[in-house]
Length: 590
Image (cartoon, rainbow, N blue to C red; front, side, top):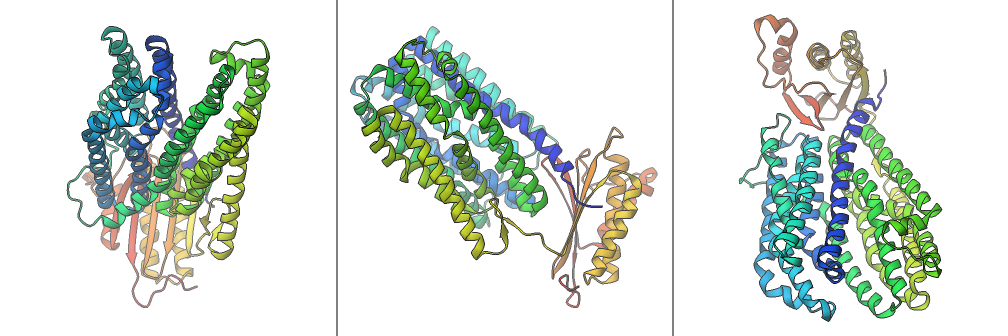
């Protein structure tokens, strides 16, 4: 018997589809948003909406940074079976994020117009309308985005995807209504986002009733300073990304408006800018799995499963990116036509050339986005921060300024290519040097090496396997210095839980796998048994007399172990037994 990734792979694909649908709904909603504004209000209003993006990046920092960092921290805590602290971090993120959003809303009447004057003079009024409404409605957007993210983290990825689908469908419908029927112009376009997110919160009702839900809101936030600090620490790279994006967008927009005067270059700039949006339609959902799945697995210290999942995310993201890149490389004209550029002369040839140059950066760009998302999930923030600073500031801004001045739009595309490749090389060089100094990490994923005092296998849900695994785990414990009584108890616990999973866990008698993991440390034995059967909490179960011959042993085992805990994480049952080791028993002995 040996460990396999079949159980966790099954969960990976179950989470992948909702995650891709969620991001696709968000990005497609943004695409339709631009089409509606451009056609119903006018191109000037669309330009104003693009110009105020730096302001939008800043006020969205609490939503996206806390959603990323908070979900990572909560996932880690759930993986560590610390539900109380997970609830507190979840609650603190909602309270803190909403409070920051309220602060933006309060100052919105006073700062919106001064901020609008920073952009094109002819578009000051439209810019003001967008900024005012975006800031005034920020609390709703932040709260909704945070809740939707935590819903996905807390065993309900499909419900989170439904939230974003509802929010964006309502947003588009409301936008048409506000603009066409109510004649609200830019006010209506900006208001539709908060309106859609607000209606999307109806999903909270279903989340509250979900039997799979583990998280609960609490106002008792005492004793969570360390955990919330971890959430803020995990938020740094996302917050830094949005902040530097705001600076980068503002600087490049100002420079671009002064350096580029040809109409065709303006169109090509729009085509190139939309390439990142096109890749995000698909890759965003893939990378979106990192905080939830990887955060939990890292919290559990299940390096085998984590390595399996993160390799899939890395490879699938690169393959999808390469396929999209190849399709557009082969026919850039088709891509340009989709976005309304129908020039048949030199303009189209120039667009095709610039698009192909920019597309060279696609794969390293996605690798850098992976680095930004992944390393905070395993509590290694430094590679992520290095990637963000180099990518969003150190390289791209000066390179764009210099190369655009000398080479126009070709320079703009070339700056992106040089930036993405340089950042990949420097980040991985840093990781290589770091691992030389810290021997416990291995490979670009920076995962700890397997502990030799760990028993880790996967078995099919067959009754005969309960006895086989029980014997193997008992022998393993004995061979590693655990006294006979504790070895027997841990073996018996394993046999009881696996037997109950086989009998009651699945409605259909199909092949399913159960993961069994025993960690031996100096102070304790920790047995974790994980399955994807029906939710079953053995710590709360009271058996009937007719069932006692099958489930009564659980009560016996609970009495023999120091602790028996249960967590439903990633829609998986996790039953954990703990036996404290006495002074004369040392789990590190051989």
